[in-house]
Image 1: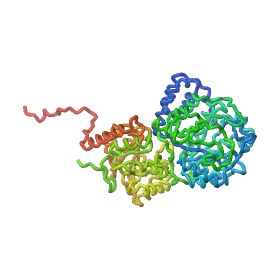
Image 2: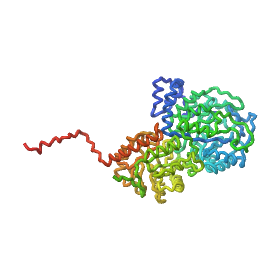
Image 3: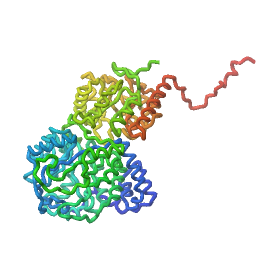
Image 4: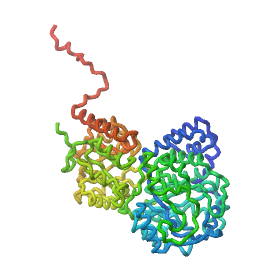
Length: 375
Length: 260
């Protein structure tokens, strides 16, 4: 494998800079942030500035997203997987109980999800498998789009034409985490299969957007590699996509390694304070970009971070196949959910903090593949 | 003095329009709308939710007396999508108004003048009162007026930035040349900026973030109401001209016409 990052992604020039307290204070109030700003805010020295970073992150979030938090939920269609990800409870060598939703089961799940009032859904699978390939996904997207306004997929990387097939079926977005942007660690983590192709994964967001997706979600799985390296890469990747596909929505998630079947322990653990620092830093440097936090995080962290940079959250998540209705077969979860609150509890918390939970923030009237001018 | 604002065949008593998308909840939004005295609020089709009353902005707003709704096309990437959204918005709300907004970049939300112009042609044909959200471009404003838009809504600054009347010089030219109402939309942060816009000759302002993101949105709504009224009164009262040099209150040449 080519173990070199392309120049437009490489964070090395900023990674080992030294920052004084004055540099960090300047970065917190920067009005034209760049890589150097982010590097300062990600630095260990900036850990002493969490409070002013939080204040700035909250002010920026409130200005751009108002006092609202958009909500979505994930639905696992299949946990069949031939992947060899060391950190995943569904890797091919785990003795996981496998399942895939059929059409009747999917419709039951969609009815349950619709009854919960969700209008944004992320459909998930493992790596490309005969049980859940593009024709299956196309059918699932079309069915889900009958029920709710916004359907996104978080699946394996595809060819541009395959993304176009999903976009034509009603899919509006793709979520695809690079996991880590460190090519050496990436190779170690992904022991076999298509996912070993680091560069094919880096380029997948381009193919998704070229294929007509309106939005792309990116991120790094915190804990796999030096998080400052990965956060700088995520930032540079986001900036590249924003410039090249100027009409596309780009969002960033902050998944951390969670306990899972396989018992993987991260080499670069990211604690809650570090996570908060990275989110504040990203908000300051990308003021208009939706930042997401999932139910991987404990309720205390989610409650605290809502509106402090974070503008979108999942809730009532299941990481088993199906799980919203009582119609799916039993299956192994991909990882443990930490925040298991139901929707009313979670919404009550948001409202108590002066934030409005938003279930519907898009309309199927706009549902057609995007076309971007050639960059 | 009867100082109503006419947009097409519609008359409005308040020159403050409100956006509705960023409030902390329905009650906060309603309180701010009421406190602001607005008679026209805009609501995004994407926030209409007929399936869940708690998540629906349209329902509670439609219950308000003396407040008319203006569905907007926020979320549309191009003219075709905007027209589709406008038609759907009118079906649901029965409002003749549409705030035409096409901001294909979902991050900075700046308007696309080309797609906006294309969509406006079609929406005027379909008898909408079209209020397009546009860059502060005097030529585009005239082109939109020429094809039959009921008003033009140039931006003061990018949505949510609170940078105020950054485009003031262009807005002055738009006001000078316009035969339709000019509404500054986006960028305002304070009632003094709203007052400034009205003093300059804008017919109205549209505000969302400045009120929704304030510590006390209802109080800020009331403050904007006062600011807009003050600005309009000042405009009507006739501001004294500015001058590069001091003007003595007693004429310097009075001695020339005096008798010895």
